[in-house]
Image (cartoon, rainbow, N blue to C red; front, side):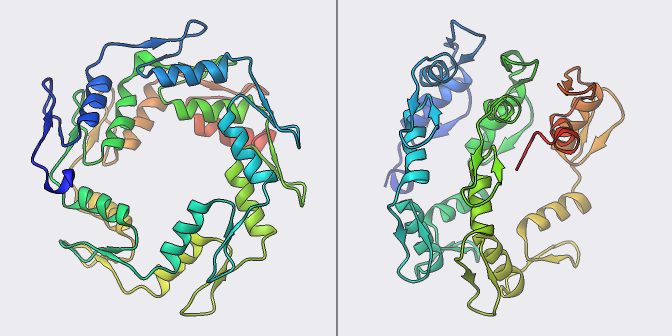
Length: 346
């Protein structure tokens, strides 16, 4: 009721940020204007969130471990152990009454039922957008019809999604780099550091119980099992197409049976994918350009400029620990490791 009918607004006294939620204002003030920081006494880790420091200390410096009594799995997180027990040793399954879908997660069954068997639809009152998810409609309305914008105070970046702004702000946190304690890798994004440690320094592997497949990523193992060892099939109700992956069925229906199209208003370009239309418009009709301040490089893609700057003007390097290969791109190093040393498995 507050969002749709309330008149009260909370305004930031240091910038033009406005929200209808007091907790969002407190979070905004802490992230963008707060000076308080929580520092780790055992390494250079710094965060504005006390909970983040507690989690960091527990994972990286804590001695307490939680062990699985049915296999050799060990973790420093009680939540991870509970999840491990449910996925690998749990017998409880939630089965769909309308098809052969089964899962160990009740929430996944509810989501499946809503998307594939539900009749209720949420319509956008300002365009032809239709979805079976209320959250998707709210996100659509905010992005495409909302007037609220989140602006970066250090550059010209603007977005209608708060989460995108938070991710963007990490680009400016050069002074708060996160460092790997086992090599010279540094990054401004915590998830990149976690991924790096897991790929390059972790010995943990997820093994398939039905073949010799192994992966360092749990979701890759799930996908492998579903594709290679599962008997369940998702069927198209309009033709004889079948697949074991939900995203493939959704893509098939959209391409072959959906009549909705996205048309360019400046030329005859037509596509069934909204993202393709946005990309087409930007490349062929957009005037915005991102220029490099150190050379004549120009692009219409901000990400390409960031990559260009990193590769051609950056000083950071990524080194292979098994040969003398050196690159300025983390992605190139990962590709090199996979091709030449086979140490990264997916």
